[in-house]
Image (cartoon, one colour):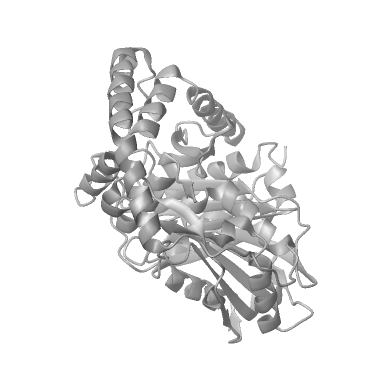
Length: 434
């Protein structure tokens, strides 16, 4: 058993209120064996991946943070749909999966295989037929970078049958043991939280106050239960033509598409960008969300890109601010019962006056294009950041090898004309070369 880090426990508890499963989608060419055969091999591979042999154990009465416990991958965690479908229809099916969140205390991940899928986009208006594999995984099990590594481990693991062994600890014994440990920890954690909180209060005036929030737009409302997914696949060279990093190039394109979609009155827009931390941490979720201004006041694309890149660099540097570090240490020490109470008490129904960004952008490089599905080459990969009551539009930026996929996640209630926005976003990628 392994006790969850504070950040991972917070992600797990929040998933009950705002589902936050990650959906890592990988498109492959046609494999050399049947899709059912691929599914059987993937299940066997999963038994070799330590992170896929875990589930959550809840401590009674929230006396402590949850624990990760061993769990043998179950055949029901790998699901196959052999219906012939188009890429658009496949995205509709994945959108339906978002409405079926995991229960990590039963299974922390699930794998979905679709094939054959026609019209898979591979850039430059080309399309092929292949197979789509979607890893649905609890956010508590890892952030975007860690989940991507888990997926890579899955596709590269051997597919021989293995026995992990061990009978495990009986449920009543585990409940009693973790409850007792939590009760013993509580006094020390409570005192530590108070001490660290006092230090944060004293240092509060020395920290960066942060930038003001952005006015709400038509996108910043409750999206309801349904989802719409779209994906634009690009060659890395096309995005690199401007001379900016991939994430910056995508943000510039968003800075052009959003005001055109929203119409007159958009004079100041920003995004909420997920930024990975470089420091080593025990937490599987080692990132934070930062506000990045899109600098609509600047017309020149290259100057706008320079300013956006400066904002990202400044946000990364600010993470080392002593006051921010002290605040994280308070969260790390907070007793589980108080941390969960705070999440339960968080008001999701009242619309905020401002937002950190009018949309969320998550960007992850998933490495070299050296993985395959039983002989089928990887074509591209993408993902769909979760929506929230105040965020009805999110973007994913995912690269593997020379292909970058930019995803759009929204809902019919927020963006019924999503294809109009996607067309505007595509136009934003038509960057003149330097």
